[in-house]
Length: 387
Length: 239
Image 1 (tube, each protein chain N blue to C red):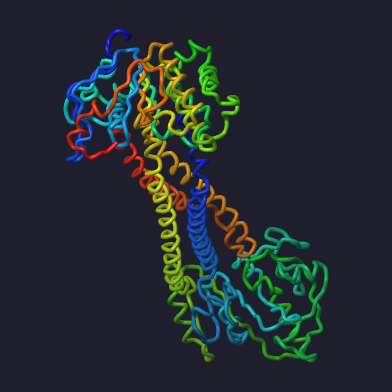
Image 2: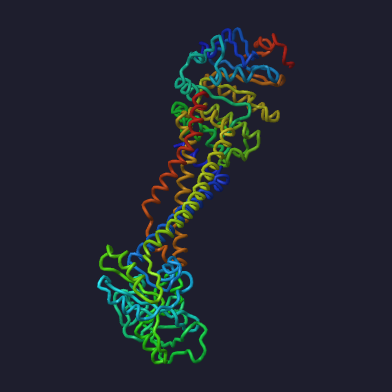
């Protein structure tokens, strides 16, 4: 029992010096876990979203840009393509479903996205405050229904009406007269969709016609095939079939290319965090080694009154091990708090729980810390034996 | 142990590197005797006490402490001998700085059941025995022992180290300049307590000092100049 008391008091005495190394280790562990978590969450979300659409069709542009905009709303919108392309693709016997998307209208600077319920499902959108719907709440009640992104929720409420206009800097003549009724508010996505108003494409087309716009157009089309085996065949067919030049991309393939860079970046961050972890562990080790000299007289005394070498070695081992356990625990708490905070900012982060791989990291760090703590303990054992 | 020899040294030689620091042809101290070893700095007083504690092993000769040959004793037997039978006062007190003064005094009782039982036999509890000893050391308020040892003055710390050496009735008390940090009144109290306690319990007391004046009451006084031939031969240390 007295050994426990000595350990407690000794830890208390060295608390100031230990705090810095504990904090450094806790922060680096949290950093390691957060980076790993974000990486997993982004990969999982990208996999989920890209698995919904097999092909994306748009005006000629960089394939990656088309994928990033159509699935994550990153980058500028692609140029428009004629509505007839969609009608033709919708008739393909290989297609399970086809979703046209238009992003050419706006409402007071907010982008208006015209599409179908299928597009909402593809992006895993959910409504949090909605009227007259079921399930995810994103089924349009009629052609003049609208869902607003979460960032518009303070200004607009379900049941209110809004009008839209052609383009993003519209003059009075560009304003459509037909009002849309807000049906619900979409859950936060962390993408620019949170600033969007989503309306049914049929309603949008009718509104355009009512305003006298003759040619119908969309920005891109999502396609889900009945069988993935026909992926390349359909891609080639679509590329060569139309008079208008089209880009037909396979999102999974493009995301895989992006994933390669994302993994490289992730590895760099992970390596940096791991170096900080190692530095923190080395700080603990050097603290112990520096303390070793000043503890020699203390150890000699304790040996004289009957303390055994294994008790003193245990004392030397227990201190850093307790520090490491405390730091790992604090690191996990910090990581949890960080992901909660990040979740409010990047909702994708909330989509996964603590992956099992994280436990491996923690175990590895503990073992590494344990090994580092064993060195001074072993020295102490040898010194005690000789005293 | 009274009547028999507590310490017996024969042809003891100890070197550090090439330097001979101890050369004691003969020394016998009877159990229950109180002995004061006087000598100047570097005369080998501390080296002799460390050899008796088993902290250093001699190069040659015999060192018998309480019937144990200190050159051949095994590690665990030495451990038990020191914990159960030897009380010691280091020159620089050596208290555990983050333990309370009270815990420092009781350290031997925490690690040795024999010392704990002896303390309880004398004062009902080991704590009471600690209080009894500390009162005898002229500490004005012996109830205030809960502060960490490092917070007390040098003189007070030395008193705690002496109480630690005496608690639990050890058979042999080795004190290395036990009153070096005290004023003359404190010194008298310390030597008086060490002598009284050891005589009352029949323990052997070996005290070293470089103070040649006003240390009374010991059964025998030894001078390192005559005891340790290593110094005389080398003539390296002037006293």
